[in-house]
Image (cartoon, rainbow, N blue to C red):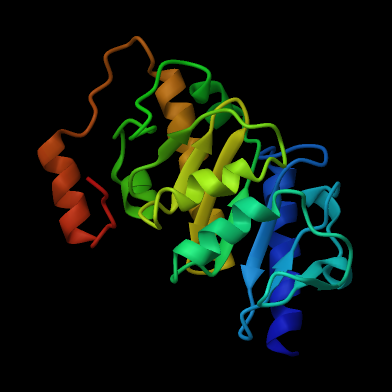
Length: 215
């Protein structure tokens, strides 16, 4: 099996798993992964994570041109912005996960969207930037990510959903699931004065696990 074939199957397997567990529904969400030649495999526009076809994933070359497969997601500017600004990005995942979206509708720190309730979101995501509302498919979303100059691996689009870049497709999926789980914890404990990690504990996690920590 070629590396590209293996990656195509892995993308579809992980996407189906997230769909089956309710992390994104209908034809929402998109996923991409970088190939060895600098090109990308991308979920097609208007498709469901529940039944992506490995053979029909869009293939985009290193210059950003669609060269094979179905038409890629309309959120390509968002994906391209992460790849162009983060040399370590091997995959990007965008979901419409319920708890993360719900938390984005409430008061939140735009520079540090997730409260530090457990070490795991810190380890896998660093600080999550809350970005303003954009119309779906608006290239300005990509501009907003580029404006972060590669300093964040994860953003939350208010009223829309999270976007996470990882070193590979498995890492990106694991990280975005941790984002959703932390958002759920934040909602479950909202107004209950939860015992969050202290600033010193957060810094201990950052140092021990060599976390990218902007600011």
